[in-house]
Length: 238
Image 1: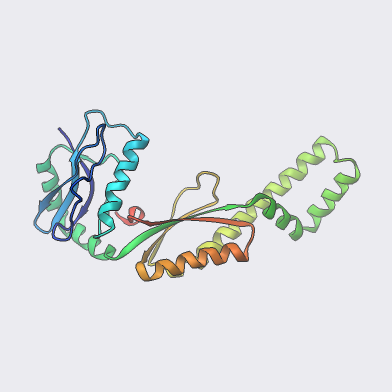
Image 2: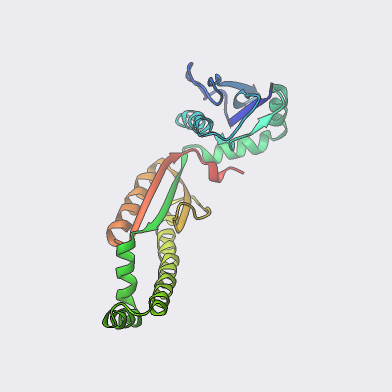
């Protein structure tokens, strides 16, 4: 049976709850494979592994549970090895790199920030900033809403201005939060957000980062920011 790997930590600091389980149906027990001063957090792997929600959440839960107490290098979902012995071989082969990364991540967590616009607020803002758009909107109203072509043109112009505003607001958020973090990683836009950024911070800086997010929302009503963390540092592990 293949060995499924959740992450890498140090065995002397790692204590797994007795009832900790991972992927599989029924969920499979989690254990440690140790080699010198490194440990892989693993379980057996089901014969047919699929990226189902249950298993994705189980993977994340194992990494989060371990990372709550000790530094952990989280593996991506679906990290497999042929056997426990092969896992020990990989720990030995890359031991120096793993030790270096564990030291860098000690006491640090990932916070993910996503930004979207509040639609009514950003539309009001782009109209307030652009006299030409306001004049065009007034002209359309004077003509009973304007022709189809006029409405289409107006919509295209507004969409362009909103995209420009997204770029400016993404820069604003990043310029505000990046100085508070040791590292920043930007990810792909998803779920309609125009900014998807992750920040590596120590415990002392985490509260300040969250406070700055809330201050940005208060100062810029068009912004809706969501913060997820503390998380295992997925975005900062090579």
